[in-house]
Picture 1: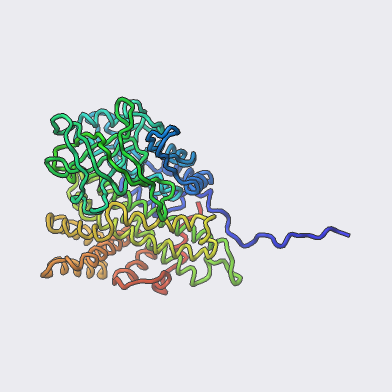
Picture 2: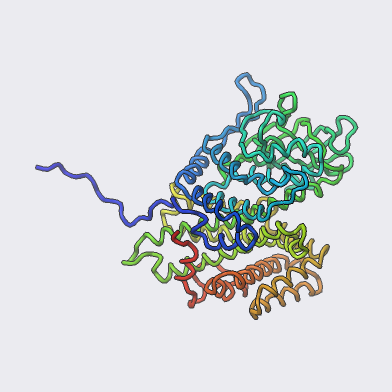
Length: 558
């Protein structure tokens, strides 16, 4: 008599793990955006990097870094303050990989040689790597982004920049807890938010008193607190505090030159919805030593370029995360069968996926047009105007679209998307972050209104650019005219800020798609998005949408 079999089933009709894809070669919209925004020469390197980021090891590193979040060690074994954040090795693997790729510094490589101009496409190529890296593990990019963005602020104090820039430009990640002068490479964080102020940083109560005379580059003593100090393991921080001359910007190192710990007392690590691999903390400043960047009273002006650059990263990263959500959904639906058909071939599902793909391509096109404007702003007035007005517009729209799209992608996977073993659930918890970090929606709208009042010529330049991109499409031109009417309307835009910003974002995305995307993508976006109706779901786009062509473009089998 044969032994009874206890095998109850074999696993069939499941999609294979999402890995082993080249995140660059399978993304036609990304490749085209990179080329047209000036980084075509980087395509071979980006292709190699796309294979690395889409590999099994890359996604496994992300899983481990999030399943083993950082821990705060406030005291050493003898009871002395330690204020150390400890990470799983996977986190350090992700940091090492991003440093080697230059995500924290490659846009500034020209600074290694005095007088050398920036390399063509350096910013766009860096952001393409960021776009792909955030798909594998986004949390560690917080200190990476801030380090990149700190360079213009540090440059306002040349003697400090001269010392620190070589360490920022190094691609050898140095995790050691040592004074700045002993490090081979450093990370730089930012501390602005306080309990009573939040976005209103002018309400900050942290005080800074000069130690010996004061003035640019001098040492000050800071006393106060920061409610959100992201990446507290950074080697130094740019912080705002109230000096005798007003709100000012300071560089605050973790350790002092003599090796003693600067008394930034970490109170706790935040328990966040997502972004688990990255530490965010509350910190008390018990007389920490910092050096003044620029003049007293110019704190916001001196740190604003850092804020602007982090907003650019937020927009690009959200577009990258939307891309991952879409790719996960298409990958699953191409392998899973329901009612005798592949899910991707079921008309209703195909329409949902194609509808999502249109938004992802729009987000990618708009984010990389913004990246290209950062490249050209120094010598191109049109790009400078786009950079100024469209940074808050792009961050607002792309980052706000991302959570809804992430949910729809998760539903495409069904229960497989809701459990923590897969990528979709972790991604869904991550997606709201970039809309909140560095200015939430209303703050972006207020920034747009500020630009419109201070620099009307910027709005005129952007509108002219969009008319040119629209190529005579009457629907896009009609929305442009509506936006111009809103600008001319009495009473201004104080209560219609969101309506204007969303309309401008949709118009810009439509114009870019009309000029650069396939007709199937552009026609679907223009036909279903420009009117601005409130949309609760995906898949309700025009029935004539060519879903097959859109999906072939959305995840190309390369």
